[in-house]
Image 1 (cartoon, helix red, strand yellow):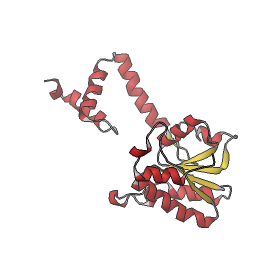
Image 2 (cartoon, rainbow, N blue to C red):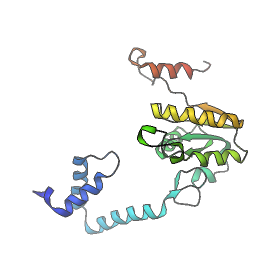
Image 3 (cartoon, rainbow, N blue to C red):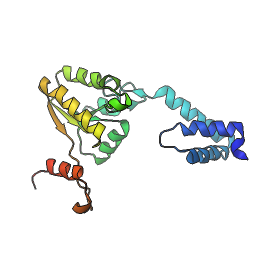
Image 4 (tube, one colour):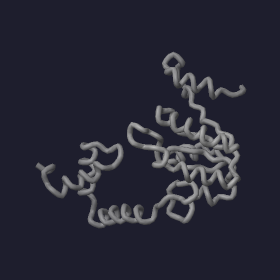
Length: 199
């Protein structure tokens, strides 16, 4: 059987280490690679190597970039007194799609989770504090996900930052458009009420 071909199995295992890729998906990806021409396969491999070599963390906000600083940090139109703190790079992309936020970002690269051995020193908290120490920051918008770990991280950051004289706000999470209130869970409704605004 094809799945016992050693090189195919190894390729499948490599795809399997990617986040969100299960065993069957990894094998499908491996078969897809076999369907590429030699030139396409080389280009695919080169793209992976190039991305690994060129992409690094922005030294200011910890977002990904292939330049010295990321595109947000070099943009003079962005408000550096307003920092939106997010768990990961994907959250930055989501917020940027809305085209409403004019501040800058700080990517934590995780959330506090003692159960999983993730303490504050294992995420980018000290880098955030260093930015606040520079004195330009007036508000931190904590936009961690509404999970137990996300909420714990938000509370930790709030307790750490408020004494520094910086305003700390939380991204409001609520009922999605088109959803019925009767199907919303308690946390969602609480967030919706807490994040209510003038109408």
